[in-house]
Structure formats: structure tokens, C-alpha cells
Image (cartoon, rainbow over all chains, first blue to last red):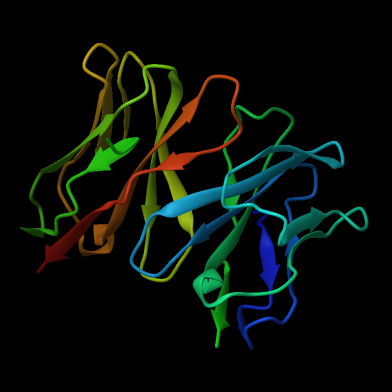
Length: 114
Length: 110
């Protein structure tokens, strides 16, 4: 069964450093998403991406965040200057040919900012 | 008021029990409804979509009451493997984002 993959599974970084989280969505999917989950809290939407542009973003997704689809398979989330409060599990998700379709989540990247 | 509200639990039930979870949502523009399941430190996985007429998938039954803005999930004949956190999720019309509740934790004991 096709699945979303994410790398790395864990990342530890110093405050102020840049991190790039990588995702490979399901191959025929057109809609891509990033969510995050701070430990003990609910899953929160960050951004959605379709047709090589951001289609929707939350107030969390400020200028420190950016997304990119650098090639036909990868989808990345960059945090330019990490803060302690960016420590969370970051989930990538993808859905098929319509935004109404089921979103399938990757296993997540656990980011720890020291 | 929280957009999606759930009782955090935990619900601690014996194997074979029937257990029901409820969820309320605040925005009447909510269009799509789901139950996801999340195991500890894992990603959310879709359990089932919730339709206006109610729907069933094996031991799982989901109901939606748009007038009361209320969603429910019923699990019959609980298995040990049902132990997880159950996330109530909504999506509003013309929006891409999923809005998650904080989840209800279920523990099924032998």
C-alpha cells in the first residue's frame, strides 16, 4: 500500500539554526500538507500546497516557515531560525486529486530545539 | 470555545465492551467529518469518515447530528488492539485544513 514517508525521523538542533524536514507524498497525490503536534497537545494545521503554491496557511506558519516542492517527489518544510517552541512532531500529509479526499499522514519527524 | 471538543478520557474498558465517544464542533460551516486513530507517538490514521446518514464499518459505527453539531463513535466488542487515542476531525467548506480535537484516549484491558 502506498504511503507517505518522512526524513529524518528525529532531528535535534540548536535554537537559531535552520532545519529542513523532508517528505515524499504518495506518488499520484496532488495536495500536500504539513501539520505539527506539540507533545501532549492536539494536531495543528500549518500549511497546504497545491499546484506549486501555498493554498492555505495558519497563523502558526509565519515568515520563519517555508515550503517547497523541489522536484517531482519531495515536499519540504524549512524553518529558518528555530525557536524552542518549534519543538514538536511534524507530520506531512497528502491527498489525491481533490482537497475533499482523505489525507494520509506520514510517520512524522520529531524535532527538538535546544 | 474550542473548534472541536472531546472528552480526553481515558476510557478504561474490558475486552468485549462497547464504548462510545462524543465530539462537538463549534462551526456550523463544517462540511466533512472524520474519526482518526492515533497510537502513542505515531501519525494519525483515518478510521472512518462520518456521513450524515450514519455509517458502519465492522465494529465501528459513526453518527453525525448537524443540528446539534455533534459526532459520535461507537466501538463494539472492544479488542486490546483498539487501545489508542481517537481524534475527532472536521474540515470546513472551501478549506483544505483538517481541524483536530485533542482526542479521547481508550484503554482496553484483558
